[in-house]
Amino acid sequence: MALVSPTPPAITAVHLRSRRRLSGEKFRRPPYASGESLRAPTRLGPLFCPGKRFNVMHISKSFELLIWGNVLMCSNYLLCLNLVEIAVKVGPHYVSPMGFGTWAWGNKLFWGYQEGMDGVLQETFNLALRNGINLFDTADSYGTGRLNGQSEKLLGKFIREYRGPNKNRENVVIATKFAAYPWRLTPGQFVRACKSSLDRMQLDQIGIGQLHWSTANYAPLQEKALWDGLVAMYEKGLVRAVGVSNYGPKQLAKIYDYLKSRGVPLCSAQVQFSLLSMGADQMELKSVCDSLGIRLIAYSPLGLGMLTGKYSVSNLPRGPRALLFRQILPGLDPLLNTLQDIAQRRGKTMSQIAINWCICKGAIPIPGVKTVEQAEENLGALGWRLSSDEILVLESAAKASPTKMIQNIFQTS
Image (cartoon, rainbow, N blue to C red; front, side, top):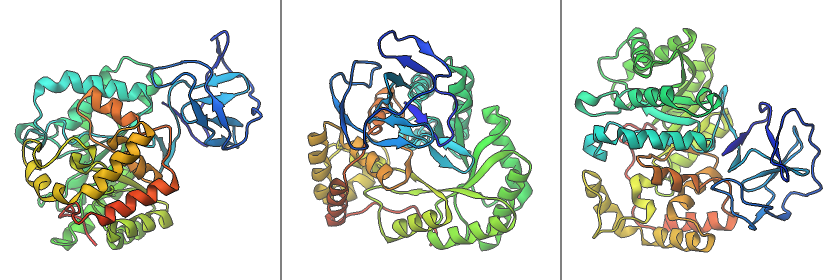
């Protein structure tokens, strides 16, 4: 997947006839209007379908490029093979409109991780990078027992051992979260936690350092120390940007104001956000993010797997998820049936529809991935958009479903 930012780097072009690479070409905008239907000229790349019609999604004013659903056309040139999306600005970063979450990497209890899976996880990471995914979310608490921090270790290892183009590796943005453990009572302890994460990943700087949850509900005096910890790690250059996770709209506004007073911009807020988690608090949080210029990152966009269509009351996942699924799945028929109907009409999967809904709402979804197959399916959520009518139908079905996702106990108001 190619990413196009408002100020992108030099673009490599391929002539449609000769396929020879061109550098530094000056491109003219082709005579096509936004919304015009065009026919794809040939098969180029595994995610490009020959002869299929695509709608023009956007014409970049900066570079006068025509952006199709999954290719860039400029005069008689094809730019940036495979999927094309507009890069999303998160603080100082330009990231893919979807990232991948790594909660499962090291978690035996909830996700059944085994160290023998590491080879498959590296293949999954490599596939993501090759297809333009550059945002990876992790946490210093991801990993169970002796594997605590395993997710960070694996991400660092996979980045170092990636054998693709250097620019892919250099563009990776790691967003890690620092747990608000009760023994982290001072800014210095939070800074040490950040340095430990850097050591595990063998990095010089973290893309986005995030406070994993707020302690306002149960240890309000600790909260200020954690905020000062974010400021300190930013001022020391240990993180390039800072964000928060599991903050509600009121507490988000408070930390935004505090960080701003210290000269530290808050770039992101991560929260459970999906068709199963679109209640009043989530939508208010999204509005606050939009008004303050904070990017919303949506974790669990598939409701821990409930929106994939792969599970039912008679076919539950293993482990603790089964208890939750048994409570919620019986009331999800209106939503799941609607997801299935739209997926069939579009030739997509239910997962791809659910992820695309998050993107359409202006969030960056970070579905978890453990296998190449999951990554490939999730990539199919990119390069197109649901219509406004489809979004309304999905949201109506979600509201009509009597059961909703249980919210994270750490999320504040």
